[in-house]
Structure formats: C-alpha cells, structure tokens
Length: 322
Image 1: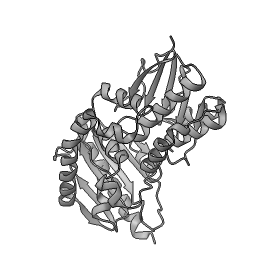
Image 2: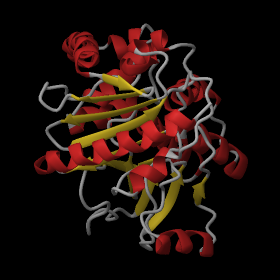
Image 3: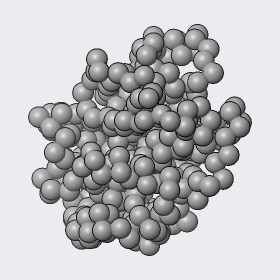
Image 4: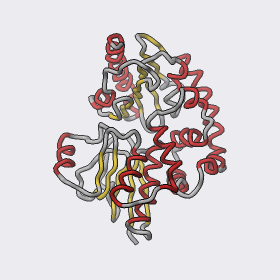
C-alpha cells in the first residue's frame, strides 16, 4: 500500500481542511487505497531530513521545498519560498502537481478549485467545509463580533484547532472533516470537553488583551507572554478596538515565542504595508494583511525586540495612511 505523507500548516483551520481535502481528492482521483500519515510544522528548520519519507510526499498550506521527494504542493502565502533559490526552482521546474497563488484567500478553496479544474475532482460534498475555511482564513467575517463570539460550529472548531496539541487528535480531526458535519464534530466529546476550558480562557483572553493593550497611532500593541495564553483569538483586538489599523502581539506557548502581526480587515483605510514582507525580514512570513514570526521559547527577548521594531514601523505607516 502506498504511504502518502501530508505536511500541513499546524494549529490552523485552513491547514487542517487543506490536508483533509487533499486526502479526499487523492483517494478519489489517484489512488483509493493510499494510506495517509500526516505531519504538522513547528519552529526551527522548515523540513528536516525525514520530512519527505513517504512514498508520496505532499505539502499543503505551507512553504515550498526544492527537495525532489516533494511530489505535490499547494500554497497561497506570499512568503511561500524560504529562499530566492527555491522560488527560482519552482518557476523553472514546471510541474503538473505543484500549485501556487498568493492571491487566493485560503489554501482550502484554492486546492479544491484547482483539483476540480485540473483533475476533474468533484468537491461538492465538501462545499460547506471549503466555504468556512475561506471565510476564516480570509477574515471574511461579517463583523469582529461574529469572529470573537464564536457562535458558529466552524468557529468553535477553529478555536479548538488553534489550541489542540495532541498529534493523534489532529489526525483524527483531519480524517473526520471529510465524513462528518462541522456541527457533529463540534458536539463530539473530544472537541466539546476540551473546548469548554478553552472558551473560558477565550473569555479571559479578552480581559487580558484589554488590560495589556497599548493603542497609539491606530496601532494596538500588547505582550501576553507572561499571562499563560496558549493561543488566543486573533480577532479580539479588532473587537476591543474597532478603530485600530494594525495589531502586533507577543505570546509564549510551550513550543514557541511568537510575534503576531495583523491589519484590521474591517478598516476602510488604505493599507500601505505588506505584513508578510515585514515578517520575512525576521524569518517569519504570512500574507500581505497578516503574518507572524516564530522563535524558540528561549528567545522571548528577541521576540519582544522584533515586536517593538515592527510596532514602530507600523505606527509610522499608519500616521501617513488616509
């Protein structure tokens, strides 16, 4: 039996749904007997020597590799290429199985539509999943209230995914997304029971961010690294400060020190900066409107310095925007 190894953007609803959609596509259009082994990404080296040890190796919603063992690739991040050499390799090496579109709002929808157009895959059974992945990753919520109050099953699952660190449950979730409704999964004890304390922390996170945030020149800056917030809803700052333009936050989890950078998706102002490019200068990446820099937990001080530099840059930009 062929072992298909799918690497995906970890602790991300779009990453999980992209992995789900690829497995369904592959079994439907390529090999129905394939066995899948998922793998998430962490900090440090992007791909280690054992990253591509499957019979078929796939990366979805994450960075490119010129490794010849990579067989399939789908991504939409403007920071998709770790080096100029790998970017050159992708564009010079035409492949019918590697796809990139930095204009796509979500990898899930991009993957589904691409596989439908190129390989005739019918993803209609997963249309609802694609719909919500596109809303979540593209920040297409009607309002910050919808994104923060988490009334929809998809948003409950988004929150669970961002806080779950059990590798077995990650793979179970990816598998079940293909066969169960979002409301059924959200009601399952393995999600519902774990989500109860997460939602309590979510409520606490709103209070903590309100207390920690400093707002100046339409930029919200905060450091919650000492507050035991292992993941928080990235839309909370816009919920609390709807007139802000940019947000920069520092957090610390068991696996990384993180600088999160975002722009207000509900703002009517014209954005003048590319956040992905800013984050890339510090070894991170993302999209023009949102990005992050991840460092080892031992480098919290470095993360705080990076955040301060980005805050200064965004405040200067925001003061000039109309």
